[in-house]
Each structure stands twice: as structure tokens, then as C-alpha cells.
Image (cartoon, rainbow, N blue to C red; front, side):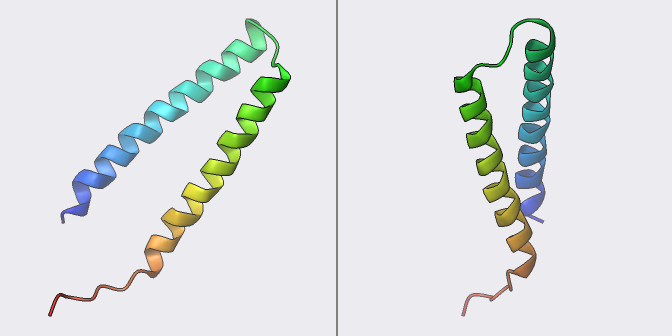
Length: 68
């Protein structure tokens, strides 16, 4: 069960990211318009999120091999 602490930390980080996305949504809808730089950064974020999602999904395929 060593993984529980790692998952707790990941979920905490994801919660923070969700909050930051909500802040950006509010900023873009009522504070200032998105710029081309913002759009490029959003594209980078989406690409990284896709890589992380694929890596997370891949964890389901890992097979435990006990040490010899």
C-alpha cells in the first residue's frame, strides 16, 4: 500500500490544477481576453495533460515482478 501516499499527493496536485483552470476560466471570461500567447500555453497544457493521461492509463498494464 505504498502507493496510497503517492496517489494522495497526485490527487492533491490535480485539485490545485482544477482550481487554477477555474481561475483562468474566470480571468478569460471577465477580466481580460486570451492572447495568442495564452492560446499557445493552453495548447502546451493540453498536450502535457494528454501525455500524463496516457502514462496514468499505462500504469494499469504494469506487471509486478518481485525481486529475486
